Length: 177
Ligand SMILES: [Zn+2]
Ligand SMILES: [Zn+2]
Image: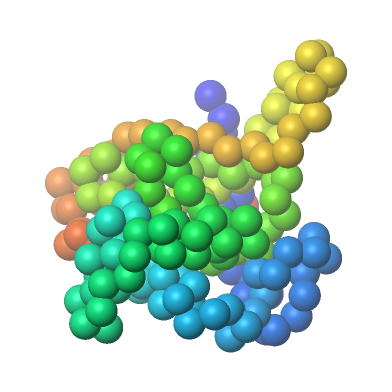
């Protein structure tokens, strides 16, 4: 088992600065997004949990009084994921905003609460090294390293479930300090 001191939870940085990231992706300047992409991202950021595409469409319709076409929303989500603004959780077929400027190849572990939907994004140097070693054995070059871990967040485990949509455990913690 990984010791907690070896787990690093991401620290927000470089977002909203308008600066291009060294990784070449356009995740530093949401103001450059088209209106549709920006609206989708704003809702993902506001909800602070993973949303399915149709739940997102419902929220966009409730906000603007206009229901966007699913193909349009899927295209916007693809763009947001490809450019580091959001992640797709394969196990949930859902999307969530990424608040952290990490590289595409950095390992990301999502801790997903099955009770309240809170998702914490974390990484670990040890995890990264292990994944690299496993890949090297097979002569495999990893493009993305994403791990989805299902369970209960601290609040739900303690029986103090936060209200849905404002998961307490989505706040940023840094066990390294
Ligand atoms: Zn991320
Ligand atoms: Zn929870």
